[in-house]
Amino acid sequence: MLTMNSAAQPVPASTRAPGRLVALTASLELPGFTMSFDRDEEIFGEGESADFIYRVVSGAVRISRLIDDGRRQISAFYLPGDVFGLEMDEAHSASAEAVTDCEIALVKRVAVERAAAQDPATAGTLWSLTSAQLRFAQDHLVVLGRRSATEKVGRFLLSMAERACSGGAVSLAMSRLDIADYLGLTIETVSRTFTQLERQGAIGLNGARNIVIRNPAAL
Amino acid sequence: MLTMNSAAQPVPASTRAPGRLVALTASLELPGFTMSFDRDEEIFGEGESADFIYRVVSGAVRISRLIDDGRRQISAFYLPGDVFGLEMDEAHSASAEAVTDCEIALVKRVAVERAAAQDPATAGTLWSLTSAQLRFAQDHLVVLGRRSATEKVGRFLLSMAERACSGGAVSLAMSRLDIADYLGLTIETVSRTFTQLERQGAIGLNGARNIVIRNPAAL
DNA sequence: TTCCTCTTAATGGATTCTACGTAGGCTCGG
DNA sequence: CCGAGCCTACGTAGAATCCATTAAGAGGAA
Image (tube, rainbow over all chains, first blue to last red; front, side, top):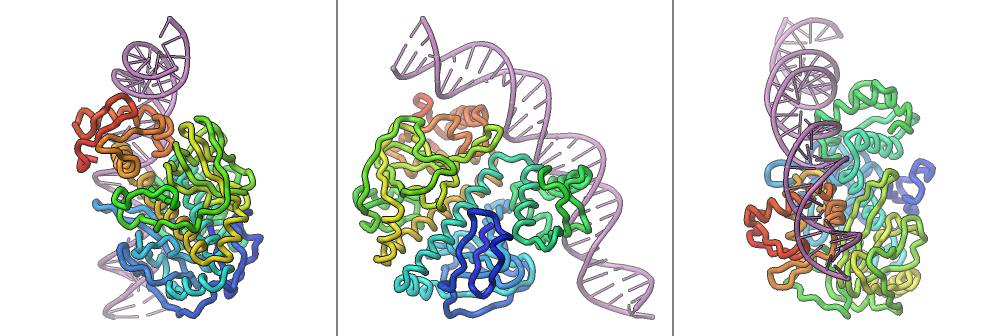
């Protein structure tokens, strides 16, 4: 999705989907600091006051919402270079957790707002980033609302390949449960679909989390 | 959802959900013009270049994406006062159609961008509006991914009541098909759920499109 | 290190059930 | 009256659920 880079973490534009490119910008290079989080550690929780904007330096992050009875929906995964926390009001409307051990760069929200008030380019970047995330969320609505289990998993793998690919092989940072909660499926359905796609020759599996896309068209 | 008002269309804050309020602002009162659209007429299409930002003056609008085989997902309905078109890049990533006959205020996108560059408040408003829509989309992801058919319809009715209520009775602008495509269901399931909710006494139906919420807790 | 155990994650099968699709009938509005 | 939109019934497909099994890591002791 939204590979939202800071100047510190350039990523070749060619690795990203057309139309999703958000111009590199130093505008968001604001005074901040970096924190480390362990796997499954909470970065922020639902309802907490939103004082920061975040950028993934290394590792992976998931944004999720929980409903009363334990059901969970993950709205997005963020990979290195991605900015998150833009959808927040005064309070966070969702929680963020580390999918893997990770380093996160934090910038005070008020500092961002102050910078945006002085520099139109920064303000424009904020709008662009948020708008790109909105487009992405709307794309995901289509997947959740209208795609079959096989299509969901296929799309997911393609999008991960596009974002986190290193030469044909994709290494997934997240568990089957995370994938299921992202795609609105159960863990069993995700697992079954993986093996089904492997049998069809659409993908190759080297262990549970290392995937090779063999036939993109079949996804 | 996001009742994003311009100064021209004030709506009492009390009719909206807490935490969703976007401050009234004249910042988006920019030189523009108004157009009328007939029911089902296209306001903009997927892939068209995005030259405007829109506000509903009267009527209702749906934003939708189509996939090859005809399946459709509606990502949002917009009611009077709501601003839409913010998720667009250079090209529209979805299409907008009139749910009912409606009047739409259009502002040139470049004019908005120019105003934002000169006035930090305008830039902030754009970010706020977009961010509110992002939160709304993420809320909807939970509904699509993790709610049952009954819960989906229930939530939909509650949210419409909150947005378009006039004294207990809700008049729905959209057809069952639109509701189904919004909730990721089929028209039959929507219809069945309506009658089921009526039999349970949760809602009252005066004709297909006039609904009274009798027991909000049951939804 | 190597082996063993404990724990967690992923897979596979059998069954149930939700909600989908088809088809037909109804109703309200024009 | 006609027709689009809405409702209902019923058989069915696809995903969920429940359960068992296998695989992969993490930690501990010799």
